[in-house]
Figure 1: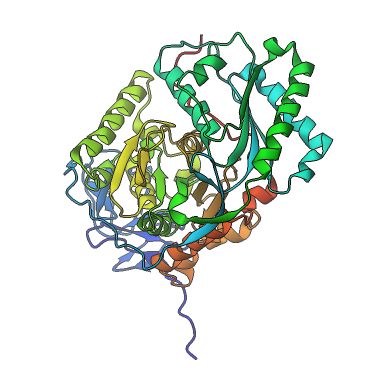
Figure 2 (figure 1 turned 90 degrees about the horizontal axis):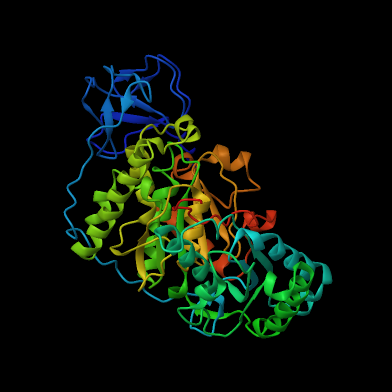
Length: 508
Protein backbone atom coordinates (compact mmCIF):
# COMPACT_ATOMS: atom_id res chain seq x y z
CA UNK A 1 0.00 0.00 0.00
CA UNK A 2 1.41 3.39 -0.94
CA UNK A 3 1.28 6.17 1.64
CA UNK A 4 -0.96 9.15 0.96
CA UNK A 5 0.85 12.19 -0.37
CA UNK A 6 0.99 15.17 1.99
CA UNK A 7 -1.47 17.95 1.09
CA UNK A 8 -0.12 20.68 -1.22
CA UNK A 9 1.22 23.86 0.38
CA UNK A 10 0.04 26.21 -2.38
CA UNK A 11 -2.15 26.16 -5.47
CA UNK A 12 -2.26 27.91 -8.85
CA UNK A 13 -5.90 28.26 -9.88
CA UNK A 14 -5.44 29.28 -13.54
CA UNK A 15 -2.48 29.31 -15.94
CA UNK A 16 -2.91 33.06 -16.52
CA UNK A 17 -2.72 33.94 -12.82
CA UNK A 18 0.28 35.99 -11.67
CA UNK A 19 -0.06 34.61 -8.15
CA UNK A 20 -0.63 31.41 -6.20
CA UNK A 21 -2.62 30.84 -3.00
CA UNK A 22 -1.00 29.49 0.18
CA UNK A 23 -2.65 26.34 1.52
CA UNK A 24 -0.63 26.38 4.74
CA UNK A 25 1.09 29.03 6.84
CA UNK A 26 4.28 29.52 4.83
CA UNK A 27 7.49 30.96 6.35
CA UNK A 28 9.77 33.51 4.75
CA UNK A 29 12.39 31.79 2.62
CA UNK A 30 10.17 28.90 1.47
CA UNK A 31 10.30 28.13 -2.24
CA UNK A 32 6.97 28.42 -4.06
CA UNK A 33 7.17 27.41 -7.71
CA UNK A 34 10.26 29.31 -8.88
CA UNK A 35 10.20 32.11 -6.29
CA UNK A 36 11.25 32.50 -2.67
CA UNK A 37 8.90 34.03 -0.12
CA UNK A 38 10.15 37.42 1.06
CA UNK A 39 7.91 37.35 4.19
CA UNK A 40 5.63 34.89 5.98
CA UNK A 41 2.28 34.31 4.25
CA UNK A 42 -0.77 32.94 6.12
CA UNK A 43 -2.83 30.15 4.58
CA UNK A 44 -5.52 31.38 2.22
CA UNK A 45 -3.44 34.40 1.24
CA UNK A 46 -1.81 35.22 -2.10
CA UNK A 47 1.83 35.15 -3.26
CA UNK A 48 3.13 36.92 -6.37
CA UNK A 49 4.94 34.61 -8.78
CA UNK A 50 6.31 37.38 -10.98
CA UNK A 51 6.91 41.11 -10.84
CA UNK A 52 3.72 43.18 -10.86
CA UNK A 53 4.28 46.86 -11.58
CA UNK A 54 2.21 49.63 -9.91
CA UNK A 55 -1.11 49.96 -11.74
CA UNK A 56 -0.79 46.51 -13.36
CA UNK A 57 -3.61 44.01 -13.10
CA UNK A 58 -3.53 41.26 -10.50
CA UNK A 59 -5.11 38.04 -11.78
CA UNK A 60 -6.70 35.12 -9.91
CA UNK A 61 -9.04 32.46 -11.40
CA UNK A 62 -7.86 33.86 -14.75
CA UNK A 63 -9.84 37.02 -13.90
CA UNK A 64 -8.88 40.51 -12.73
CA UNK A 65 -9.16 40.93 -8.95
CA UNK A 66 -7.66 44.44 -8.79
CA UNK A 67 -4.53 46.44 -9.53
CA UNK A 68 -1.20 46.74 -7.77
CA UNK A 69 -1.04 49.91 -5.66
CA UNK A 70 2.73 49.48 -5.26
CA UNK A 71 5.45 47.43 -6.94
CA UNK A 72 5.04 43.75 -6.04
CA UNK A 73 8.14 41.57 -6.25
CA UNK A 74 8.11 37.83 -6.97
CA UNK A 75 7.59 35.96 -3.71
CA UNK A 76 5.84 38.90 -2.01
CA UNK A 77 2.62 38.67 -0.04
CA UNK A 78 -0.23 40.17 -2.11
CA UNK A 79 -2.91 41.73 0.07
CA UNK A 80 -4.49 45.01 1.17
CA UNK A 81 -1.14 46.80 1.50
CA UNK A 82 -0.37 46.47 -2.21
CA UNK A 83 -3.63 45.50 -3.96
CA UNK A 84 -6.63 47.74 -4.60
CA UNK A 85 -9.72 47.98 -6.78
CA UNK A 86 -9.41 48.76 -10.44
CA UNK A 87 -11.36 48.40 -13.65
CA UNK A 88 -12.98 44.99 -14.10
CA UNK A 89 -14.38 43.02 -17.01
CA UNK A 90 -17.67 44.43 -18.33
CA UNK A 91 -17.79 42.45 -21.55
CA UNK A 92 -21.19 41.00 -20.74
CA UNK A 93 -21.56 38.94 -23.94
CA UNK A 94 -25.20 38.31 -23.08
CA UNK A 95 -26.47 34.74 -23.40
CA UNK A 96 -23.44 33.54 -25.38
CA UNK A 97 -22.51 30.71 -22.97
CA UNK A 98 -25.91 29.40 -21.83
CA UNK A 99 -25.56 25.66 -22.28
CA UNK A 100 -28.27 23.28 -21.01
CA UNK A 101 -27.17 20.73 -18.44
CA UNK A 102 -27.19 17.02 -19.17
CA UNK A 103 -30.28 15.41 -17.69
CA UNK A 104 -29.81 12.90 -14.85
CA UNK A 105 -30.12 9.22 -15.61
CA UNK A 106 -32.99 8.74 -13.16
CA UNK A 107 -35.22 11.04 -11.15
CA UNK A 108 -34.75 11.31 -7.39
CA UNK A 109 -37.16 12.08 -4.59
CA UNK A 110 -37.23 13.18 -0.98
CA UNK A 111 -39.79 12.72 1.79
CA UNK A 112 -41.58 16.05 1.95
CA UNK A 113 -44.88 17.69 2.86
CA UNK A 114 -47.30 18.34 -0.01
CA UNK A 115 -49.28 21.58 0.23
CA UNK A 116 -52.69 22.47 -1.13
CA UNK A 117 -51.15 24.80 -3.73
CA UNK A 118 -48.91 22.04 -5.12
CA UNK A 119 -45.71 23.16 -3.39
CA UNK A 120 -43.70 20.86 -1.15
CA UNK A 121 -42.11 21.63 2.19
CA UNK A 122 -39.08 20.13 3.90
CA UNK A 123 -40.45 21.04 7.34
CA UNK A 124 -43.98 21.43 8.79
CA UNK A 125 -44.10 24.41 11.13
CA UNK A 126 -46.87 26.62 12.43
CA UNK A 127 -45.89 30.22 11.74
CA UNK A 128 -46.81 33.43 13.58
CA UNK A 129 -45.97 36.30 11.22
CA UNK A 130 -46.06 39.99 12.07
CA UNK A 131 -46.91 43.04 9.98
CA UNK A 132 -44.99 45.44 12.24
CA UNK A 133 -42.44 45.50 15.03
CA UNK A 134 -45.24 46.52 17.44
CA UNK A 135 -46.76 43.02 17.20
CA UNK A 136 -43.44 41.17 17.50
CA UNK A 137 -43.61 40.56 21.25
CA UNK A 138 -47.20 39.33 21.02
CA UNK A 139 -46.17 36.88 18.29
CA UNK A 140 -43.53 35.51 20.64
CA UNK A 141 -46.05 35.38 23.51
CA UNK A 142 -48.36 33.29 21.33
CA UNK A 143 -45.58 30.88 20.40
CA UNK A 144 -44.44 30.60 24.02
CA UNK A 145 -48.01 29.90 25.15
CA UNK A 146 -48.34 27.12 22.58
CA UNK A 147 -45.10 25.55 23.78
CA UNK A 148 -46.12 25.96 27.42
CA UNK A 149 -49.54 24.35 26.96
CA UNK A 150 -47.90 21.27 25.45
CA UNK A 151 -50.61 20.36 22.94
CA UNK A 152 -48.12 20.26 20.04
CA UNK A 153 -47.31 16.73 21.22
CA UNK A 154 -50.76 15.73 19.98
CA UNK A 155 -49.69 16.55 16.42
CA UNK A 156 -46.63 14.41 15.60
CA UNK A 157 -46.33 15.64 12.01
CA UNK A 158 -45.68 19.23 13.16
CA UNK A 159 -42.14 20.46 13.79
CA UNK A 160 -43.09 23.29 16.14
CA UNK A 161 -44.19 26.90 16.10
CA UNK A 162 -42.05 29.77 14.74
CA UNK A 163 -42.66 33.44 15.61
CA UNK A 164 -41.39 35.80 12.92
CA UNK A 165 -40.72 39.26 14.41
CA UNK A 166 -38.90 42.17 12.78
CA UNK A 167 -38.12 45.86 13.28
CA UNK A 168 -40.14 47.39 10.46
CA UNK A 169 -43.73 47.94 9.29
CA UNK A 170 -44.32 51.54 10.39
CA UNK A 171 -42.53 54.90 10.30
CA UNK A 172 -42.23 54.38 6.56
CA UNK A 173 -43.85 55.48 3.32
CA UNK A 174 -46.64 53.27 2.01
CA UNK A 175 -45.77 53.97 -1.62
CA UNK A 176 -42.01 53.55 -2.03
CA UNK A 177 -39.58 50.74 -2.86
CA UNK A 178 -39.04 49.90 0.81
CA UNK A 179 -42.74 49.31 1.40
CA UNK A 180 -43.05 47.10 -1.69
CA UNK A 181 -40.00 45.09 -0.61
CA UNK A 182 -41.33 44.45 2.91
CA UNK A 183 -44.74 43.54 1.45
CA UNK A 184 -43.14 40.93 -0.85
CA UNK A 185 -41.16 39.54 2.09
CA UNK A 186 -44.14 39.07 4.42
CA UNK A 187 -46.30 37.63 1.67
CA UNK A 188 -43.48 35.31 0.60
CA UNK A 189 -43.05 33.94 4.12
CA UNK A 190 -46.79 33.35 4.37
CA UNK A 191 -46.57 31.27 1.18
CA UNK A 192 -43.39 29.37 2.08
CA UNK A 193 -44.15 25.62 1.91
CA UNK A 194 -42.26 24.93 5.14
CA UNK A 195 -45.18 26.47 7.00
CA UNK A 196 -48.13 24.12 7.41
CA UNK A 197 -50.31 26.96 8.69
CA UNK A 198 -49.80 30.68 9.32
CA UNK A 199 -51.22 33.27 11.69
CA UNK A 200 -50.53 36.93 10.78
CA UNK A 201 -50.66 39.39 13.70
CA UNK A 202 -50.72 43.18 13.34
CA UNK A 203 -51.13 46.04 15.79
CA UNK A 204 -53.86 47.82 13.85
CA UNK A 205 -52.62 51.36 13.22
CA UNK A 206 -49.36 50.62 11.39
CA UNK A 207 -48.40 51.63 7.84
CA UNK A 208 -48.08 47.97 6.77
CA UNK A 209 -51.79 47.24 7.19
CA UNK A 210 -52.97 43.62 7.36
CA UNK A 211 -55.75 44.24 4.76
CA UNK A 212 -53.13 45.59 2.37
CA UNK A 213 -51.08 42.41 2.73
CA UNK A 214 -54.19 40.44 1.78
CA UNK A 215 -55.29 42.75 -1.04
CA UNK A 216 -53.80 40.67 -3.87
CA UNK A 217 -55.82 37.62 -2.86
CA UNK A 218 -55.34 34.44 -0.88
CA UNK A 219 -51.80 33.85 0.32
CA UNK A 220 -52.16 30.10 0.72
CA UNK A 221 -53.96 27.62 -1.46
CA UNK A 222 -54.78 25.37 1.51
CA UNK A 223 -56.73 28.01 3.44
CA UNK A 224 -54.61 27.50 6.56
CA UNK A 225 -54.15 31.20 7.20
CA UNK A 226 -55.63 33.51 9.86
CA UNK A 227 -55.17 37.19 10.71
CA UNK A 228 -55.83 39.40 13.70
CA UNK A 229 -54.77 42.76 15.16
CA UNK A 230 -54.00 43.47 18.79
CA UNK A 231 -56.17 46.59 18.81
CA UNK A 232 -59.04 44.74 17.17
CA UNK A 233 -58.89 41.88 19.67
CA UNK A 234 -58.84 44.16 22.69
CA UNK A 235 -55.24 43.98 23.82
CA UNK A 236 -52.38 41.60 24.44
CA UNK A 237 -53.98 38.89 26.58
CA UNK A 238 -57.03 38.49 24.36
CA UNK A 239 -54.84 38.41 21.24
CA UNK A 240 -52.61 35.73 22.75
CA UNK A 241 -55.58 33.61 23.81
CA UNK A 242 -57.28 33.87 20.42
CA UNK A 243 -53.97 33.36 18.60
CA UNK A 244 -53.29 30.13 20.48
CA UNK A 245 -56.84 28.94 19.72
CA UNK A 246 -56.45 29.75 16.02
CA UNK A 247 -53.16 27.86 15.82
CA UNK A 248 -54.63 24.83 17.58
CA UNK A 249 -57.54 24.81 15.15
CA UNK A 250 -55.22 24.96 12.14
CA UNK A 251 -52.77 22.48 13.67
CA UNK A 252 -55.25 19.64 13.25
CA UNK A 253 -55.39 20.29 9.49
CA UNK A 254 -51.65 20.92 9.15
CA UNK A 255 -50.94 17.66 10.98
CA UNK A 256 -52.82 15.72 8.30
CA UNK A 257 -49.92 16.48 5.99
CA UNK A 258 -47.42 13.65 6.45
CA UNK A 259 -44.08 13.08 4.74
CA UNK A 260 -44.47 11.41 1.36
CA UNK A 261 -42.21 10.87 -1.67
CA UNK A 262 -41.83 14.13 -3.58
CA UNK A 263 -39.77 14.63 -6.78
CA UNK A 264 -36.50 16.42 -6.13
CA UNK A 265 -37.67 19.01 -8.65
CA UNK A 266 -39.71 20.48 -5.76
CA UNK A 267 -36.55 21.49 -3.89
CA UNK A 268 -35.60 25.17 -3.98
CA UNK A 269 -32.18 25.76 -2.40
CA UNK A 270 -30.84 29.14 -1.31
CA UNK A 271 -27.11 29.36 -2.12
CA UNK A 272 -25.28 31.44 0.49
CA UNK A 273 -21.82 32.21 1.82
CA UNK A 274 -20.64 34.16 4.84
CA UNK A 275 -17.40 34.59 6.73
CA UNK A 276 -15.61 33.74 3.48
CA UNK A 277 -11.87 33.12 3.29
CA UNK A 278 -9.22 32.41 0.68
CA UNK A 279 -10.39 28.79 0.45
CA UNK A 280 -14.03 29.64 -0.33
CA UNK A 281 -13.52 29.92 -4.08
CA UNK A 282 -11.30 26.81 -4.13
CA UNK A 283 -13.28 24.25 -2.13
CA UNK A 284 -16.80 24.80 -0.76
CA UNK A 285 -18.14 27.29 -3.30
CA UNK A 286 -17.30 25.30 -6.46
CA UNK A 287 -18.48 22.09 -4.73
CA UNK A 288 -21.77 23.82 -3.91
CA UNK A 289 -21.89 24.94 -7.53
CA UNK A 290 -21.67 21.32 -8.67
CA UNK A 291 -24.48 20.36 -6.28
CA UNK A 292 -26.51 23.27 -7.68
CA UNK A 293 -26.01 21.92 -11.20
CA UNK A 294 -27.14 18.46 -10.07
CA UNK A 295 -30.34 19.87 -8.60
CA UNK A 296 -31.09 22.02 -11.66
CA UNK A 297 -30.50 18.98 -13.90
CA UNK A 298 -33.14 17.15 -11.83
CA UNK A 299 -35.60 19.96 -12.51
CA UNK A 300 -35.13 21.79 -9.20
CA UNK A 301 -34.33 25.40 -8.40
CA UNK A 302 -31.35 27.14 -6.84
CA UNK A 303 -31.27 30.82 -5.89
CA UNK A 304 -28.00 32.77 -5.88
CA UNK A 305 -28.18 36.20 -4.24
CA UNK A 306 -25.99 38.92 -2.65
CA UNK A 307 -25.64 41.37 -5.54
CA UNK A 308 -22.67 43.25 -3.99
CA UNK A 309 -20.90 39.89 -3.85
CA UNK A 310 -21.17 39.20 -7.56
CA UNK A 311 -19.92 42.71 -8.38
CA UNK A 312 -16.97 42.36 -10.72
CA UNK A 313 -18.03 38.84 -11.66
CA UNK A 314 -21.43 39.68 -13.12
CA UNK A 315 -20.05 39.14 -16.63
CA UNK A 316 -19.71 35.42 -15.81
CA UNK A 317 -23.46 35.33 -15.11
CA UNK A 318 -24.68 37.50 -17.99
CA UNK A 319 -22.94 35.16 -20.42
CA UNK A 320 -24.95 32.26 -18.92
CA UNK A 321 -28.27 34.12 -19.10
CA UNK A 322 -30.93 32.38 -21.16
CA UNK A 323 -31.61 35.66 -22.98
CA UNK A 324 -30.23 39.15 -23.34
CA UNK A 325 -33.22 40.49 -21.37
CA UNK A 326 -32.35 38.30 -18.37
CA UNK A 327 -28.70 39.37 -18.50
CA UNK A 328 -29.62 43.03 -18.78
CA UNK A 329 -31.86 42.77 -15.72
CA UNK A 330 -28.84 41.68 -13.67
CA UNK A 331 -26.75 44.57 -14.99
CA UNK A 332 -29.60 46.96 -14.15
CA UNK A 333 -29.46 45.76 -10.55
CA UNK A 334 -25.68 46.23 -10.53
CA UNK A 335 -26.15 49.85 -11.68
CA UNK A 336 -28.80 50.32 -8.98
CA UNK A 337 -26.26 49.20 -6.37
CA UNK A 338 -23.55 51.51 -7.70
CA UNK A 339 -25.95 54.43 -7.36
CA UNK A 340 -27.27 53.25 -3.98
CA UNK A 341 -23.81 53.03 -2.42
CA UNK A 342 -22.55 56.26 -4.00
CA UNK A 343 -25.51 58.26 -2.66
CA UNK A 344 -24.65 57.01 0.84
CA UNK A 345 -20.95 57.84 0.64
CA UNK A 346 -19.89 54.21 0.34
CA UNK A 347 -18.42 52.11 -2.45
CA UNK A 348 -18.79 48.54 -3.60
CA UNK A 349 -15.30 47.62 -2.36
CA UNK A 350 -16.42 48.28 1.23
CA UNK A 351 -18.00 44.81 1.15
CA UNK A 352 -15.12 42.51 2.22
CA UNK A 353 -15.32 42.34 6.01
CA UNK A 354 -12.35 42.33 8.40
CA UNK A 355 -12.83 38.56 8.75
CA UNK A 356 -12.82 38.12 4.97
CA UNK A 357 -9.52 39.99 4.79
CA UNK A 358 -7.93 38.02 7.61
CA UNK A 359 -8.91 34.91 5.67
CA UNK A 360 -7.03 36.11 2.58
CA UNK A 361 -9.61 38.01 0.51
CA UNK A 362 -8.66 41.55 -0.49
CA UNK A 363 -11.07 43.22 -2.94
CA UNK A 364 -14.74 42.75 -3.75
CA UNK A 365 -13.65 41.58 -7.21
CA UNK A 366 -11.75 38.68 -5.67
CA UNK A 367 -14.56 37.88 -3.24
CA UNK A 368 -17.18 37.99 -6.02
CA UNK A 369 -15.28 35.67 -8.33
CA UNK A 370 -15.21 33.05 -5.59
CA UNK A 371 -18.83 33.70 -4.59
CA UNK A 372 -20.18 33.24 -8.12
CA UNK A 373 -18.78 29.70 -8.10
CA UNK A 374 -21.72 28.73 -5.83
CA UNK A 375 -23.97 29.04 -8.89
CA UNK A 376 -22.26 26.25 -10.86
CA UNK A 377 -22.54 26.32 -14.65
CA UNK A 378 -26.29 26.08 -15.30
CA UNK A 379 -27.98 28.71 -17.49
CA UNK A 380 -29.29 31.69 -15.50
CA UNK A 381 -33.02 31.44 -16.17
CA UNK A 382 -34.31 34.47 -14.29
CA UNK A 383 -33.33 37.55 -12.25
CA UNK A 384 -35.77 38.38 -9.44
CA UNK A 385 -36.24 41.30 -7.11
CA UNK A 386 -35.73 40.74 -3.39
CA UNK A 387 -38.36 38.31 -2.10
CA UNK A 388 -39.92 37.87 -5.53
CA UNK A 389 -41.18 34.40 -6.45
CA UNK A 390 -39.44 33.01 -9.57
CA UNK A 391 -41.78 32.34 -12.47
CA UNK A 392 -40.14 29.00 -13.26
CA UNK A 393 -37.46 26.58 -12.13
CA UNK A 394 -33.72 26.38 -12.76
CA UNK A 395 -30.79 28.53 -11.65
CA UNK A 396 -32.12 31.93 -10.55
CA UNK A 397 -30.49 35.13 -9.29
CA UNK A 398 -32.25 37.21 -6.61
CA UNK A 399 -31.17 40.80 -5.88
CA UNK A 400 -30.18 41.33 -2.24
CA UNK A 401 -27.55 42.87 0.03
CA UNK A 402 -24.53 40.79 0.95
CA UNK A 403 -25.47 40.79 4.64
CA UNK A 404 -26.31 37.13 5.22
CA UNK A 405 -29.50 37.25 7.33
CA UNK A 406 -31.03 39.91 5.07
CA UNK A 407 -30.14 37.95 1.95
CA UNK A 408 -31.42 34.60 3.25
CA UNK A 409 -34.64 36.26 4.44
CA UNK A 410 -35.24 37.32 0.83
CA UNK A 411 -34.45 33.88 -0.54
CA UNK A 412 -36.92 32.21 1.83
CA UNK A 413 -39.53 34.78 0.82
CA UNK A 414 -38.76 33.78 -2.77
CA UNK A 415 -39.69 30.19 -1.94
CA UNK A 416 -36.48 28.47 -0.75
CA UNK A 417 -37.28 25.38 1.32
CA UNK A 418 -33.61 24.59 2.03
CA UNK A 419 -30.54 26.80 2.64
CA UNK A 420 -26.92 25.80 1.93
CA UNK A 421 -24.31 28.10 3.44
CA UNK A 422 -20.52 28.02 2.91
CA UNK A 423 -18.18 29.59 5.45
CA UNK A 424 -14.44 29.78 5.98
CA UNK A 425 -14.29 31.80 9.17
CA UNK A 426 -17.16 29.98 10.89
CA UNK A 427 -20.52 31.72 10.50
CA UNK A 428 -23.23 30.42 12.84
CA UNK A 429 -26.91 30.93 12.07
CA UNK A 430 -30.14 29.16 11.18
CA UNK A 431 -33.25 30.25 9.33
CA UNK A 432 -36.51 28.79 10.62
CA UNK A 433 -38.73 27.55 9.08
CA UNK A 434 -36.02 26.45 6.59
CA UNK A 435 -33.14 24.09 7.51
CA UNK A 436 -29.62 25.32 6.80
CA UNK A 437 -26.75 23.02 5.74
CA UNK A 438 -23.34 24.50 6.65
CA UNK A 439 -20.25 23.80 4.52
CA UNK A 440 -16.78 24.45 5.96
CA UNK A 441 -14.24 25.63 3.39
CA UNK A 442 -11.27 24.28 5.37
CA UNK A 443 -10.75 21.27 7.60
CA UNK A 444 -9.15 23.22 10.47
CA UNK A 445 -12.26 25.33 11.03
CA UNK A 446 -14.51 22.29 10.51
CA UNK A 447 -12.72 20.48 13.37
CA UNK A 448 -12.62 23.58 15.56
CA UNK A 449 -16.37 24.29 15.13
CA UNK A 450 -17.63 20.74 14.59
CA UNK A 451 -20.91 21.38 16.42
CA UNK A 452 -21.85 24.04 13.85
CA UNK A 453 -20.67 22.53 10.56
CA UNK A 454 -22.43 19.83 8.53
CA UNK A 455 -19.87 19.07 5.79
CA UNK A 456 -16.08 19.46 5.58
CA UNK A 457 -15.04 20.71 2.14
CA UNK A 458 -11.42 21.13 3.24
CA UNK A 459 -10.75 17.52 2.23
CA UNK A 460 -10.71 18.77 -1.37
CA UNK A 461 -7.28 20.15 -0.47
CA UNK A 462 -6.27 17.85 2.37
CA UNK A 463 -7.20 14.50 0.78
CA UNK A 464 -7.62 15.24 -2.90
CA UNK A 465 -11.42 14.76 -2.96
CA UNK A 466 -12.69 16.10 -6.27
CA UNK A 467 -15.13 18.98 -6.65
CA UNK A 468 -17.56 16.56 -8.29
CA UNK A 469 -17.34 14.04 -5.44
CA UNK A 470 -17.94 16.75 -2.86
CA UNK A 471 -20.80 18.17 -4.91
CA UNK A 472 -22.50 14.77 -4.94
CA UNK A 473 -22.01 14.50 -1.16
CA UNK A 474 -23.69 17.89 -0.72
CA UNK A 475 -26.56 16.90 -3.01
CA UNK A 476 -27.17 13.64 -1.11
CA UNK A 477 -27.09 15.58 2.18
CA UNK A 478 -29.78 17.91 0.82
CA UNK A 479 -32.05 14.94 0.15
CA UNK A 480 -31.58 13.56 3.67
CA UNK A 481 -32.14 16.96 5.29
CA UNK A 482 -35.16 17.64 3.07
CA UNK A 483 -36.53 14.30 4.29
CA UNK A 484 -36.23 15.31 7.94
CA UNK A 485 -32.62 14.76 9.03
CA UNK A 486 -31.78 17.71 11.33
CA UNK A 487 -28.88 20.03 10.52
CA UNK A 488 -26.35 21.22 13.09
CA UNK A 489 -27.99 24.65 13.26
CA UNK A 490 -31.37 23.00 13.93
CA UNK A 491 -29.86 20.86 16.69
CA UNK A 492 -28.51 24.05 18.29
CA UNK A 493 -31.87 25.82 18.05
CA UNK A 494 -30.92 28.59 15.64
CA UNK A 495 -33.56 30.47 13.69
CA UNK A 496 -35.23 32.78 16.19
CA UNK A 497 -33.29 35.95 15.37
CA UNK A 498 -32.42 35.66 11.68
CA UNK A 499 -35.56 37.07 10.04
CA UNK A 500 -34.13 40.41 8.87
CA UNK A 501 -36.03 42.03 5.99
CA UNK A 502 -34.15 44.50 3.78
CA UNK A 503 -34.84 48.04 5.01
CA UNK A 504 -34.40 50.17 1.87
CA UNK A 505 -36.62 53.16 2.51
CA UNK A 506 -36.44 56.13 4.87
CA UNK A 507 -37.37 55.62 8.51
CA UNK A 508 -39.72 58.48 9.42
